[in-house]
Length: 243
Image (tube, rainbow, N blue to C red; front, top):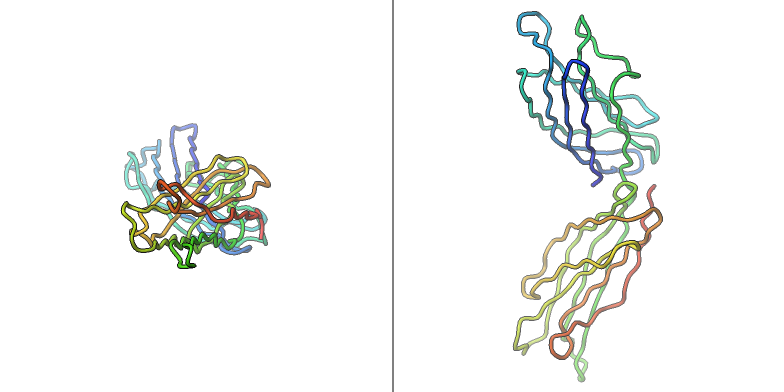
């Protein structure tokens, strides 16, 4: 999922860091989660005001949703944050943060608060690469397949998830392996390798891409002489940024 990284410091040394992730929820929604670490530079222990950080999120063309957190002390306040929201079709998402550092505890206006814009990602695409090997009598000796999906993960990433399964025929004298290979157009191949007997396994993988890159996947197994790999057809997949 695309990372959301925010670091913000005010002129009175209040400081905030947010490390999180965001994901599309259809073309009109999004979800997010992460950890907020906030420290106020104002000591208000002797007055009636509390130090509050306001965490806002919303579609870039829409209004904001506010989440206020009262800081418990002047040290680091570590807060788990998660939520969801709506947006215009395929809109980006804004995150905005501010401290209530006005003399009466007011927050700054939108022009002086910190804003971060994020592209959630595109729709899921089906992935089903397959490799089947047979002996001279037509008996199936290897069956390797991936049943999953992939999508654009923000403007420069992708995610893959699904089930990788492999079966081998009887009589092998050594451990037999199956391999799931993947890459974008601008990447070198990466792979996940498993003992066939260890499958099925659930995979959740990520990688980087450039704008317009396709995703390529392929599966195989040690079906050849000397345990060399045989592979199925290389599958390509478009990764649209928008729904």
